[in-house]
Length: 339
Image 1 (cartoon, one colour):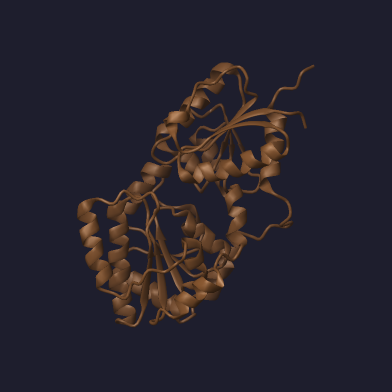
Image 2: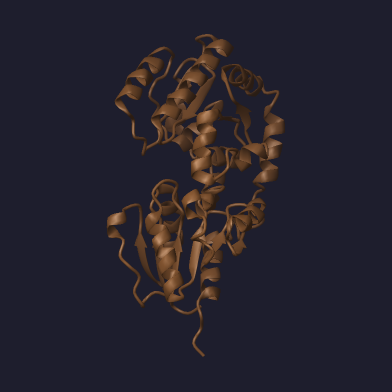
């Protein structure tokens, strides 16, 4: 493989993490790399000294990624778009601007829809690089000890999103359902999104909600809570739900009108593929949430859920093969070779 000059750019945290893994593999392979993560201030126009560009397509702010794609069109440079999650290729403001991109989709079931959206070249070569880490148990003995001494079981882990209002709706629903299903004999483990913009009015409401139940602070990341909590609950296309499904953990997806509207903004579709494929139970209100919590806590729904998770996310045939190497191979095949 010839030495290539590759530019990577992903504005949001998810795309930046996945592209960073590929960029690191490219450096180790001897390629020359320019990597710009989630800071648009470092963006500079393309010059002639680039063989290929690899971007994500961020959920809210993606104009720098699309701008690089347009410059690739102008300069005849291969543009590879790496999906960091299901449906990330379908941002509505990207329609009509991505026909020159080579899309590496997150799942083979998405290829037909991506073509219909406007991608002329689509491939599935193993999913986002970060998902390879989802097979690995993340909890530590210290975290397990802290959780075991927390008192009331079950522990219900709730993961927040960037939108504070929707996160509060999720919390409100889980708390009401938990009180209905378990009275006060349970623990809420709330993990806010690191990039959430918490509005003052939402902060007040949230504080009151968290004080209404047993909700101690755990020394755990979302990954650790997925491993140790009896059930995890997510919403709005959260990548943590995919992680839970990879590890065959009990998981619930919350969906209401606000969630569906936000999903349309983010992916162009109100429903989310992995949930519709059955890797999580879906709850649309407090009553259904209480039923879902009960079914998973008593164990009656766990086996069927894990079976469906294994169908949608089968284990890799060869865990030693890294998708980063496959991505670099695609990039190398796209770059024109000198005669």
